[in-house]
Image 1 (cartoon, rainbow, N blue to C red):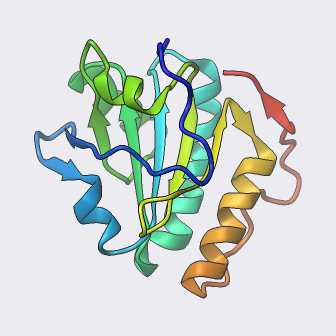
Image 2 (image 1 turned 90 degrees about the vertical axis):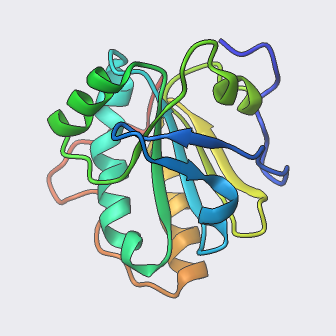
Image 3 (image 1 turned 90 degrees about the horizontal axis):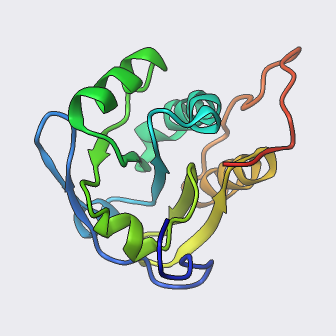
Length: 167
């Protein structure tokens, strides 16, 4: 639980530089030079994270080839985070925010999952915690508009997707 207020829409995203599960460092400043970035903070054992991340993977597959970056930011160790990515079929980088979770604290993450959609200018365009169907739809709409991409379905016919699951 963060001691700071959660970064809000319109605010500047704090800079971050974290290693992924393979040890490669990712810099938000460098990524934003190429396009928007979706940051998804999570814990491996969080049931809502386990539910949400396959939908984030769908967004990643729709937009990654068009300049958007997607990063999972784990509050667990490398091995557990790598296993999580494998189990849920994630193909985007999983970064490690080690104790004392400085990056999570900088963003005011109080619950997992917490999402931040950061525009190339460094401003947060969307933030949300827990699983929110509306937040994912809004993320898809914003990315579609800003990247001029016509995405496919985010929620498949016949899928029963709740409006919200708390984190």
